[in-house]
Length: 376
Image 1 (spheres, one colour):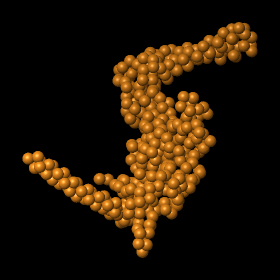
Image 2: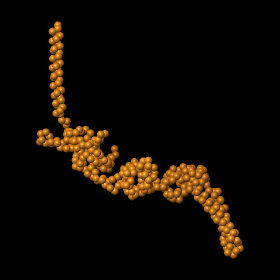
Image 3: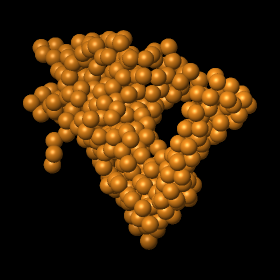
Image 4: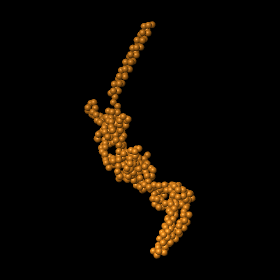
């Protein structure tokens, strides 16, 4: 019995050893095959690193402001008897907007004008009698003062009527009507918004380190989601002499033509300030960059001789780069690559250093500095 158990144990150990050896040989064979395995070449597109000349620009977000804009208000308390404008219409300087009740002032004016006329006649007679010494100089002064007082009274009543006859202070476009016929307007009550639309100001801020580059007359370009696909031209007309102590930014104002009145005060716009200097840069498609937290990189396409030496293979080499400004489909590279080198333009995310590739530029997209997305 003991011999049977011992032989069974020995047989089991031998079986386990044989199975382990066989499995170890299989694993070693698989490891050797894995070391010799070469992944198939990946199909990619390529682009050549090019030298380009880009104009120097500064970008900012601006806000539109009317060259002249006010809320038209009442100066005196009176009832509205006439509304002479249509909401949203264009008006000229001096056009009547609202007429307040002036019936009492009109009556007072007729009385004051009659008194002034009498005072004027008395003054004319006094001027004729004074050289004849019929009246004393003191009487003449009294008559002259009465005439001036009557004239001043007439001017005061006319001024009151003019204040109740509310007119447009300048040409522009009206907003929504905020009053009703028959309503009593108090001093300071708003009537309607009036904005001069053409031209229009755009205010934006730039960092103080850019102050030396900014001056009057430089061209600016505006884009807005209210004008899709359009760029509006203008120029700098004023630079604030004071830098904001909180943000260390300087405020700049440009004037933009707005003949169609598509730009409205209060809108935000994207502002591009075009500087006279140009910069020479190295550009690659932005899709060629493999972005990473530790550093950005690109894959450079190179030819590497095979082990046999009879031919060469196309492989990629990962190269870390320092990036600059991006415009359209292109991005500038400050360091890491040289002009004339070839980089992978699409498909970089699936590559690793030293991997073989097949370049097929028939699938390459068209890269543009000012791309225009297609509808649909």
